[in-house]
Length: 133
Image (cartoon, rainbow, N blue to C red; front, side):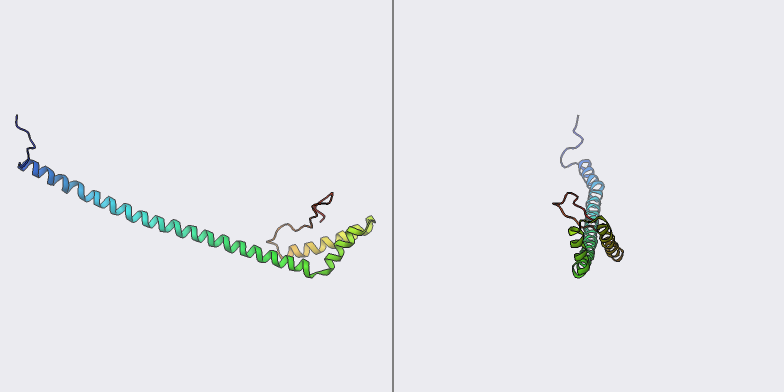
């Protein structure tokens, strides 16, 4: 029985050309599509990450500016320092209550002017009750 794909036969040549004609364009098109989609998606992911990082950096910068503003309010207001010192030195309950109310009023004013800062407290880590106000 003769071999159907002997070298040099017309049948073998036609089959090879047909395979090349049928397989080469889809393979080429698939490679081009994959390359295009890969570059587009890589660019989108990179720009999304960059935008997210820029947004986080802006948020952190705003928070630091708010904290700087609050710390300046506390540092420049000598009255608040005097009130805290008076509270710590006073042993009478009524005077402590009045001073504590004045300090809380000052803290409320700072919290009102800078609502993005969040919780503002005076913290003394070595005290029996570390959070004073």
